[in-house]
Length: 306
Image (tube, rainbow, N blue to C red; front, side, top):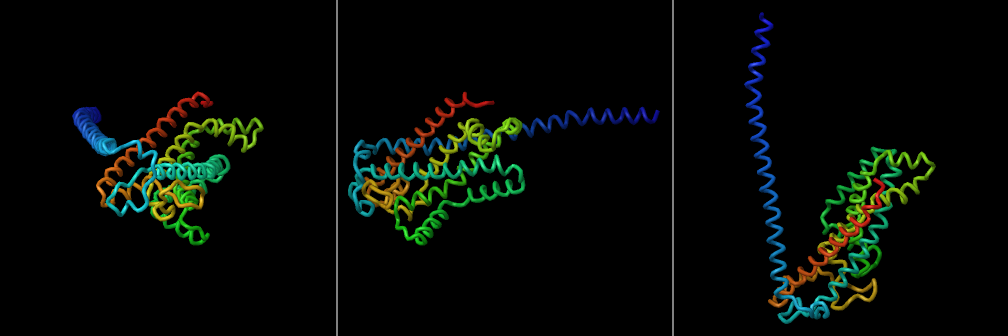
């Protein structure tokens, strides 16, 4: 009888505790969901305010001559019309495309090495990923200082070449880790099946991983390009300033972020207005690249094996 009474008492206690625990969990879920919704609304609201202000002020001061004229020399310290920003647009595209291509060549090889050859050494692989994550978080101004040090060591003056080298170092960890995260999703059984059929690891890398991860590689290129074309701190002192389109790699080059920085700090009201137009153009460039990458990713998604 004692055992039966103890069992009944336990069942009664559990029956009373269950609704309380259920109610507590429900309250926690409601609170967490409310916090998530508030955070999402705040993030979207802040981003919306930034984009609306850029588009509103940028369109009001935009004129087509900005795309066909170069910046006038010395206008950043004068109160006159600064002219157009064609040289800054072309310089940014030269810099971003070249540095992203260079980072892709090196980063893709590194990511393939990590996922095809270094899987036998998990401790070394985890260390490499940790170091890449650490380097990813380094502020871009540190890369600018590193670029200046390399310029002094190699005897290179401020130029487009110095900017390409600096920005390539800046986006290289981003490129490697972005591609690496995509390649980690490739099934282990797929790799083992390919190797068991007599294929080499080189064939596994370029015929399986490249095809399987192509949409993710495009996304990594987009992410790196966006960081390359939108960063000012890493190129502030290494590319210099040029009122014309650079004719060679050894010429100085203007970029859109640095031009926006100079225009917004100019005493000229016209220059400050054109800074918003330059920001508007930079936002449109990044938007177009994003849409293009989404189209390419969706188009090549059908060629995935799984």
